[in-house]
Length: 549
Image (cartoon, rainbow, N blue to C red):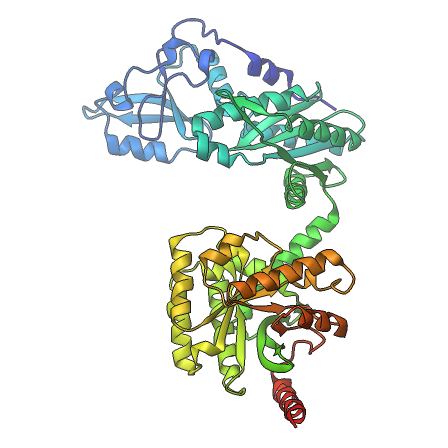
């Protein structure tokens, strides 16, 4: 197999460009036709710096005609004959290099100038690494060679972890220095059969050749991950920016650039999902999971219109009596059957669909609650994405007015993730709901970002203890200590406590003994379909009446 072209490598390492004489007719401009000076530090001679804007060089040209010609350029050089106001013409060769334009007015010294332009067109000016264009050409050529041999090639895609905060907090200049240091650190890990590229932003890629793949690529990826665990020092500040890597190998994972890139993309996604700062090799199951996820995402957009959603209701007990139900959203896919909420709700939140879905759930739940005894409440979950949407309180108030449900019969359940930012808007929303008479419950307390300051800052009526602490409540002393502490704390703050996931009589007895107000779980009932609620309520009321007698 041929190695990555030596000529390209030599050009990449060139410190100065000998143009063979003055090159005052090669000029560089940005999209606004302003002069662009030294693009490669010391790699570009002073004579290449334009002294003025494009229009100052060619004042006689028609601006409209020139701008139209510039905008129509592709990636390759294009000779243009542009007529000036006096009827004369100019032969200009214009190259488009990313967001820049290079203008060649004369054919003199064209070989040297074309070499300069070729380097600019195929290399990243910030890091000096070959760019996306060169990467595409090299990968295509090398894959063609692997097709006619028994050798393999590995492709690694690298993303820097936590790079954005560097730009946001220290500025883009520090970010640029970090990218340059990252490029050097990547190159330091490579052997003569490997080559690194900068694709865009904080995205890098490595083509690894030679024998021993895919094992060689895995070892290289481990070296790269380890190298990025060391701090970067920028302006005297130690920065920790790791890398996640996705690996694919030809021909086993693909024989075309598109197939190989897709495979390494999926592996990179898996590496980030598992916690970042690691390398993952492509596995065909990754593609299956992605395809299933995309099928669900497309289906989810139609689920509400096609009435695929429905609501089940789980009873809530207090003092041995049923006092209401929690509304639980369900999705029945026409082909895949029941989809767990833990799968589709994050998708709906990410795609901005939860406000519409949440409004539907609220209306359906309130309509159903109107059929229950007047003292029964309905608890409805509000996702973080929905809570942070403007106009939430107005929509809830309008729904209650439309349905006719008294506000005190509605309890909204929010999770601690909603409260990560103690913004004025968050406080105003909760206070407005409280003024309206709507109950507020803090769901899954103790499992996410628990902070006692939440309980002081926000007006809650109920704290719900997550089933994680209830499962081993009868035997685990730590769980008992935590639950007892939460119950006492809530009561001292004039809040009620609901325990979720109660399945055993012993759990219920222990919770009653420490003063837990409400119970919810399979011990009472599994979530009920709408058609089973009436019979359940009749049975619960009959039991309550017998108990009174």
